[in-house]
Image (cartoon, rainbow, N blue to C red):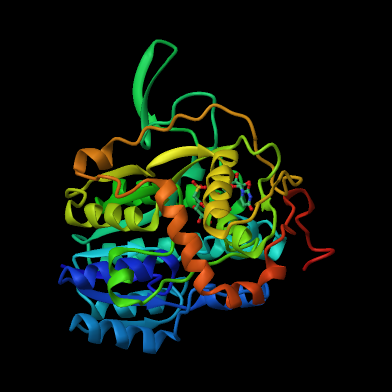
Length: 393
Ligand code: USQ
């Protein structure tokens, strides 16, 4: 299979590229290197070592004996998208090339606009290019579990049956996102459903939970790490907690810490994406997966990291309930369905508790780098203080 990965330089894009290469598929990579730039701007960087893109691509190509063709550019530019789509006839396109940080989108008006315009612009360019050039290709698009928010009822996989005033229909489940970033994914979802309805494009929309971890099978085999972010804008809960444990910073459980999210390891995220590619949406089909393994509260995750950290590092680790910089419910019902991937054959690889040990040991190896970025870890982006035109950051 020939697969175009938009966002090949990112946390998931890189790990997916290695898996595809290992399994003998042809990979075309596209990236604007946006995440590298934006992470640098907040005074941080990847704790795991990642070489510059050309070296990264050539090392991986050499290791697996297959060339990755790389296009450097912005998917928000329609000419750029049409150009690589015309050159590369592919079976599937994986779209990961979006601004992926909720805190970044909440810094202020500039960042909110950038997130909405960038994310929706890239996706609309892509569906038009697919309609014109590759109408039979399969689009695997990364959405987020955060599109649903935390309603007081079960969350289905995309659609639910509803009765209203005596009539029944199957409709998209209502969305209630918690940041401009998460809303940008909701808007993408609506646009993808429409592209499917009018042009019959084959689309899998993946509602993914919070991914954690430093490793996959291929990273173990090659030593070609994917990026690992720890700062308050680009780092995510579990990964940040592990770094806090190693650096001796109290673990920042926001608010009461009872908010629940779906989590899955990087290894499992890649396995699920592979399943979605190997068993694609049918002709004219739009389907939605809820992609996570188990859901945990922030307090539970913090406690796993504390326990593992104390046993590995031999010192006590503190959990600190700092003021929640976000506007979110920190006590709520949470029961999202996640059956479809299991039905396709997904088996979670390991338990979250085992993974925590591995992440902490990896961070210890790169402790000097983590130390360099220590000052970027504390929360600074407060949803309520998101700045408008008058006091832009
Ligand atoms: N949290 C803490 N302490 C921290 C960081 C986060 O308690 O130091 C809490 C947050 O308040 C939130 C939860 O952890 O309730 C998740 O936050 P996060 O930063 O790990 O993840 P989030 O901002 O939701 O976004 C991340 C990825 C995003 C992806 C999403 C999946 O950055 O690209 O779409 O996870 S989900 O959360 O399921 O929507």
